[in-house]
Length: 108
Image (cartoon, rainbow, N blue to C red; front, side):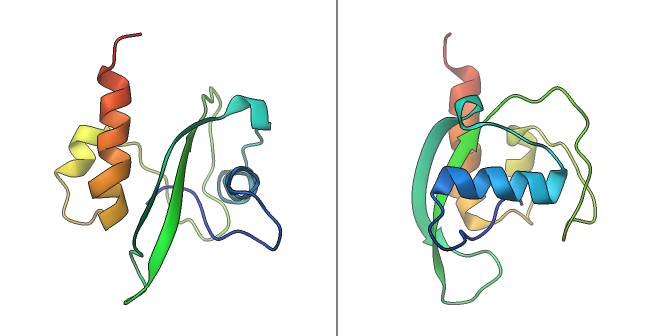
């Protein structure tokens, strides 16, 4: 799973990710730090018969995030290696990881 969560009342997707990344990793960003990579509708990973609208944003960070809130640990996995795992959420497998790989392999 990646950091993220459900929006609070009146929050935009970007405001949600900024709040969630701060709550879950202790990292603060400004809106200008992010690029939007895509959005998808798909099945929720841990809620049967539930669909979610997922938004993917990217930002660079050079510090050391810490697992906070409901996170127990952090693990950095290359998108290709993550696709080989059997415990990856459907939206990650079908959309997020392929998008990250395509962006990584795209010419600058």
